[in-house]
Length: 572
Image 1 (cartoon, helix red, strand yellow):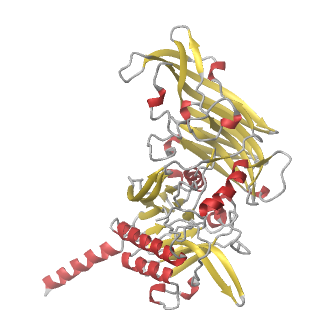
Image 2 (image 1 turned 120 degrees about the horizontal axis):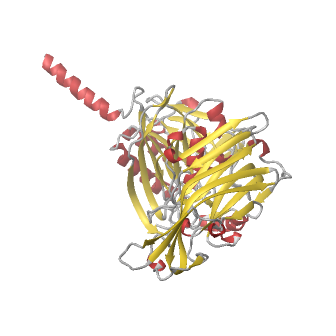
Image 3 (image 1 turned 120 degrees about the vertical axis):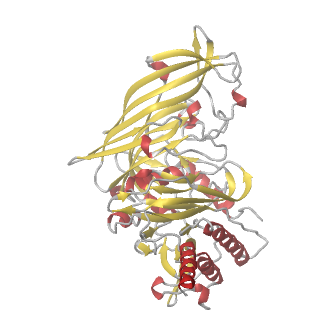
């Protein structure tokens, strides 16, 4: 009898530990974010397309369940893929409804609820919600959260809409949170919300939320708004765990997903160069009174499908309102200069020069100080640049030029919102022209700089590698968030950009009565773009300040095109 009891307990413990992935006592939980490429066949009805995406969601949930995942996040507009004709009524979390067992709920919610039950997952999805209040109807961009029992436990309606004129905006921002059985309380918001003070900052500062689930369909923009760049900077600045799931479609420029552990840095991320669905899985250190005690571990990436390899169009900010200065190493005396042999079995030589320069750049009364330590390599012009895969990569900015930029003003978005900003940063440029700055390398606008050396003859600048970048300035200090916005070049042909490791970045803020002395020390190698990007929330949605006013001209031109493209998402 005793042996039978022991066997029973062993079986019970085995089943328990294999169904409950993480527990409150653990110092981490396991999360999955999905870089999801939706399917939409124009020959099918809206509901048939939605059901096809639901089936793919369910398949993804089954895959991650094998990796002991606790919570999975799907992206903004993933279920309906820009289809604005389908809306779903979502139960109020207060009613404790489980759609899988409730006849009156929508079929989409029933299927997702059942999948959450079957795979013992917390599931976060985004959809278009229909809300009826008496005789009035409202349509929202809504995040829905299911627990492991398939019950709807949270519902968040997007407050900061990016255009989305067919949808309603809640009268006030909602602070939506939900608890989990592994001891973590999450907050949630959506895409453009991350740019503004509420509800994003409110969750962190008013409710002490340490973990955020973030569905998004981001349009990346240089020099400071590449999706993974914004996600990692916000996570670092707020020191929260951010689970960001991005919609993926190269035609419309949507990509960017990741899992970030606050100031400990990124756990896993992707800014894709291909249309397809990838699943990122990582162990997330829990935030306790002692901070994060778990160390970062290698993450897992699962390729669910890949449709085509194609670079996404990268938007770029109009920099004409900024004060700028092109970095021309040849105008400075090098601290060191020496020849070297170019590797690869050639008899060609190169020249390497080291520099350490200090520059001050002001936009009105706001000034930025830059201390840059870097080396420039020049290759003899006979080198075959065309066959150099890194030289032709879309994010290989270190082969070209850089420009210092400073701004103190207000940015006006084409969709109507505006945001206060102070910026001290460095942007990549493909040649000397300001119009060549903050755009991806398409091979058409590149104009490598050439010099003449008395020993080696004509040389072409091959690379600029930074040993350190130190940026300082006196910033506004009321209702402000200082983001260390940094993007590096990637060696992977399948991705755009890399993120800097936390050990290579240090942000320091010294508050004074009227201002804050902010410094950013970076030790990058293949630097792409970035610097100190301060969000001045008290200036948001106000007329232009005297100090500056910037409008994103590229977005104003691209948005009509995006609207057209959004109705033509790939057919399958």
